[in-house]
Structures are given as C-alpha cells and as structure tokens.
Image (tube, rainbow, N blue to C red; front, side):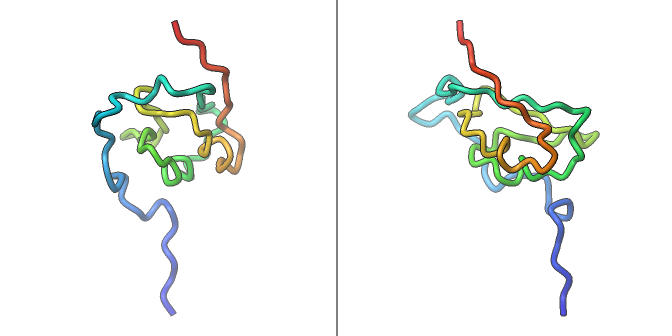
Length: 94
C-alpha cells in the first residue's frame, strides 16, 4: 500500500499563474482582505493549496505571502486555515 503525500511534499509552484487577461488585475474586486498572522501560522500550506486565484505564494523561508493585486477576497484561505492564522479585514480602497 502506498503512502499518501502530505501537502508539504507537493511542489510550491501553482498549476497556473495569474494573468491580466481581459479583466486586468482583480484585487479591486475584494470586500474583505485576508491578512496572515505569521506568529500563528504553522506553515501547513493549506491556504496556498486552496487559493483559486494563485494569489498566495510561499517565500524561500516558508512564510505565506498574499499578492493583493490578484486576491479577490473569496476568503477560502480564511476558512481552510486550521489554526485561524488568517484574519478577514474590511477592505478600504482609496
């Protein structure tokens, strides 16, 4: 029986990268902004794995980074974080 891979065994390159396309940068669509509390983050990478916009990356030192130019504010990362290290903040543009 083969052992199932953990999320940390997958490559850190998303399946596709965001592109501007017809809609341009989509970060202005947000109502809420996900904000990562790095002191609480355990590095499980579930936020990165579930992000439908590929707006979350893992830096060389393993820290989560959110590209707000592409993050639409769906908050899937917020809901998937097992330790609640991601807060949702009302977006204020301008």
